[in-house]
Length: 347
Image (tube, rainbow, N blue to C red; front, side, top):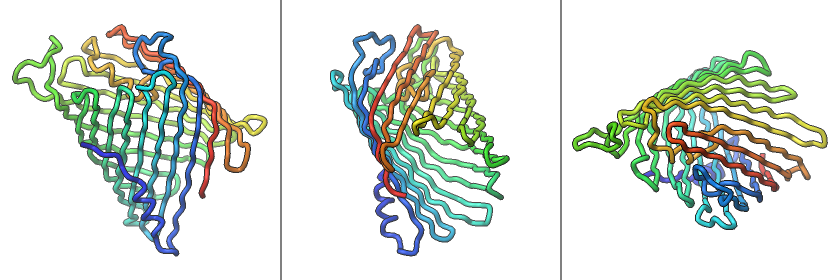
């Protein structure tokens, strides 16, 4: 059983650090109200899924540095409530904690733990990762990181979707001048599920082995920082399963642009296109795709923000999510629009 992290413990530790230690903390609270066209997050949802909603999210982060030691922690607490679909009210906690020790001028090692817990609605889950990192950064332009760790996912509505995994991989970051950067990742892992592997009859015969999936993913990104901020990503993921109807191959292309507009308005627009192929001709875990539709659907989003004081912004947000499973004849679409304020504090 996985448990959400308690980043507040790290923040307390930072607050108790010696006076000569270098540390900083900051936070933000965002209150939004608006509408959701698919509150239950269902496939083939009709207009009956529309509902008014409000959300409150509080984020915080802190870091501590002393000599060769650095500690970092962040957390996010958020809730969303609906007017008619009270059964879809959710509360989410998430956090990350990392401790890094610089062993040599260009080499450091770190331990990192992260977790997310979602309660409420129809798709409760807990997700946690613990991993170790080895980082080589000979200068400010180049950074190479290697990682290895364990990953656990628990899906309460259907425990057969949960898994434990061993994962390893690496990242490369190269900033070839002050404004341009290239990034790349390569990751792999082996997942073990509690259920038995199914055959072409969509059932698990007697004596069938446990379901195991191998996951291989790679990505490449370009980032530009200037008067306009821009980033484009391409990601490829292959999940091969010994259980019929669970193998899928995915490609995802996404881009994000941020620009300062007149009247002190900041605009951030993003979009993503996804292509998924199912070699078995069907995908039997379609419900799990809706756990995070922001990561598993074609999407377009726009965020506008304007400061009304040194610490308070007014925000307008819109997003469209769309997904279709051709083999399963299932279609998913959701639009959300919110207006609200955010307040920030700290360093």
